[in-house]
Length: 229
Ligand code: CTP
Ligand code: MG
Image: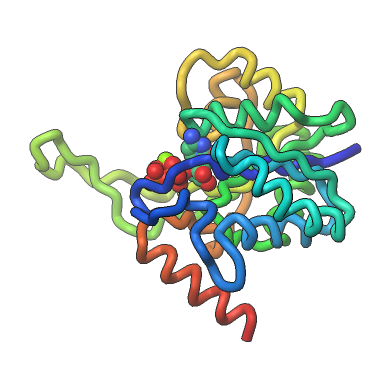
């Protein structure tokens, strides 16, 4: 039974505000995408690797990552993304080999997510045969606020979680959910849940934070430097 990891890296990174698309911004000795791929290739079980990138980056990504994937013994496929994250994931799903039965979807922007987190998600998908999302407790006090900025109430945060990637699914569940989805969702777990399928949360990892704004890139640079030291 084979695993595939789809790394979605086709966004432009508007909020980061860099000249390059976010996944191609320098990070440590490589790029946001290469740091993300390092974790994927360090998984206990080598997965099929699918990189979803901007259409004008397909060829260059293929040539720069082919040697790294080959050295790790991973099959590599690079495809062009779409206008939304959901379209980009669908593009990755469309090229999975038939042998794949467990699929992880990961944001390239969560470049520092450790290999162990991927292994834990794979283990949970296999053991429970359902969708699995890594999630962290919400630490801030959360308030519901009206359109005009008035604080209405404090939300009980004990039942709230901030979810991350990699999110893992039995391949059939993800294929089914994508085939039947008629609206946009912000993550794969929401899309799978909308198809009536069960998704469980497992403990996330603070290092799986998403590089969104410049301060996040700064934090990522510090973590990469600490890791190398
Ligand atoms: N993504 C993608 N295809 C899209 C949009 C997003 O593959 N059409 C990917 C991004 O590359 C990123 C992940 O989805 O790895 C999470 O999206 P986000 O952090 O929002 O990245 P961007 O959309 O690039 O950033 P922004 O929203 O600031 O433009
Ligand atoms: Mg975005």
